Length: 149
Image 1 (spheres, rainbow, N blue to C red):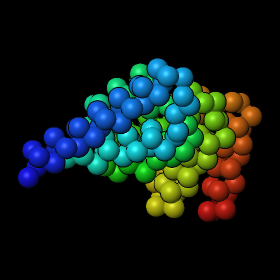
Image 2: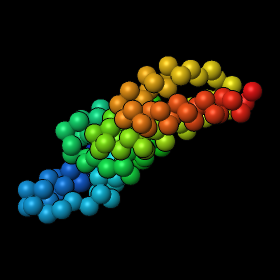
Image 3: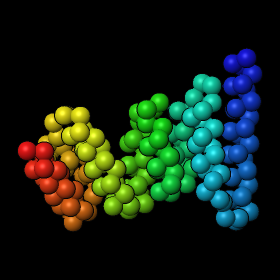
Image 4: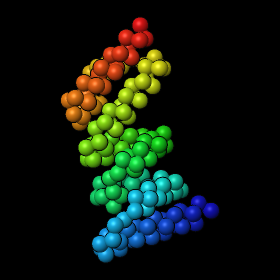
């Protein structure tokens, strides 16, 4: 049954892509849920269409949106590059506070499980952040480390 499911999934994916294209060609505003539906189709197809997902993100078939970036983060366990794809999307949106939030949640989880996190690691991960937000992230890390001592 896998080939049949794969063919149906591919047809659905192309149908959504063509619908999005026709909306764009007609100058009709596309709804964000269609992009998220397409993302869901690509990741949950059998087999998952990760390379197509990356292409659609690269060529803006799937629009950049904070909600879409957070959805990508949910798929990180099944496809680890989703983490970087989400951060890249947030960066293109200049959503630096969301980037800091994502990175801090990662740092907090690492600290909670006893993984060593250095200030340099936070700086490297948040290289696209604004200086003020990076300072806030480092201050939070310092406060968290101080509380653990």
